[in-house]
Length: 483
Image (cartoon, rainbow, N blue to C red; front, side):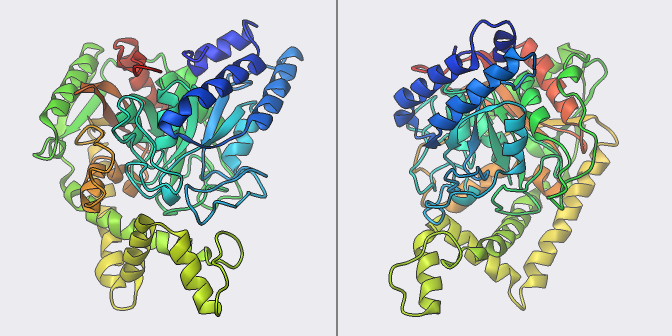
C-alpha cells in the first residue's frame, strides 16, 4: 500500500479494494517503524487520523466521492491545526497548540484528507537544509548522511521514503522546489496568492506561498486542487477561478515554447547537473516542444535582494514572539526588558537570530533607503525580466539547484554558501510566479531536479509539462534503498 501514489489510492478507495482506515493504520505503523531514521515528523496525530479515516469511509459508503476523500497526507508544521502542536520547528512555539485550523488545513479536511501528522522543518522556515529545526536535522532517505533540503525537508523526506503519498509544504525562496529536487519528488510553488496564507505562520509575508509535495505531477494536481482558492481571511489571496488541474494533464506539448536562460549555465552549476538538464530538454523536444535561448539579466542581483527583503519581513513578523502572549517564556525575569531579551534569546535558534538582526538592520533609520528600498527596486527588475521572457516563450526551464544535496553539517560554518544554493529558485518568489521541480536523474546516487517556471496562474501548464515528461521517463518512480 505504501508504494501507491495519491491517484492510485483514489482509484483503490473508489473500487473498494481497501478502506481509508486500513490504509491509515498501515502508514501510521510504517511511520512509527521507519521515521526514527529520518526524523521527518514532529508530531503524529494517530487519533485524529483514524477518526478522519473512519469518517471518510462513511462518506464514501453514503455515495460521496473525491480524489482526496480518505487520502492520507501530512502538514508542514507551520500550518495551524486546531488543538495540535504547531511548532514551526522552533523552541519558541514548542508548547503552542493552535486554536484554529489554517485555511489550507480546513480545505483539505473538508475534502476528506486524513492528517497523519505534522512534519519537521527548518526553524520558522529559515534554511535550505532542514538542519536548523529545534527537533534536530531531518535526514535524506537517499543517503542518511545528506540533507533533504529545506525548509520543507520533513515533508519531502517523508514522501520520498514512502511514509505517505503527499504532504503540504511552503516556499519562500525555494523551500518546496529545492527539497523536491534533493529527494526525487515533484514539488509546486503556486502563484503568490493562489493558496491562502491564513493560519500559515509567516516568515516573509510577500514571498511565502503554500503548495504540494508529491511523487508525481498528477498527485500535485490533486493536492493543489484541494488547497487552492480565494480566501477572504487572507488579504493577499487573489480572487481568481481555480481550474481543474487534473483535466489539463493530457494536453500535447507540440509547439510549446520553452525558454532556457543562458545565465543558468554559469560556472556555479555542477556540470553533471547541466548534462541532466540538457537530457531533459531533449526529452521535451521529442514531445514536440521548441527550445529557445533567453536571458534574465538581473538574475545575478536576486540573491542579495532576497536576503535583504526576506530577513526584513522576518524581523517584523517575528517581533510578536516576545514571551508575553504565547510561545517560550524565560524563567524568573527581573523586569519586562529581561523577559523580552531572554525569552527571545532562548526561544530563537542561531539562524533565526541571524536573519532577525540582518532584517532589523536593513529596516533601521538611515539604512532603509540604502538596502530595503533598493532591494525592492531590484525585485521589480527581476519581475520585468520574466515578463519580457514570457512574451517570447510559454515556460522557462533550468536546474532547480546548482548542486546535489550536501552532507549534514557541511555548510553550517558558512551560511552564505547555503544561501547561494537558492540561486535558481528565489527569482520566482521575488516575482510571485509559479514554479515546479521534477525529478531529472541522479548524481553520485543523489537526486537532481529540473525546474519549470510559468506566467501567473499557469500552474496547470507546469503540471501538464511535468506529467507528459513523467509519462516518458521513470526517474520519479525510483525509490530510495531501504524504504
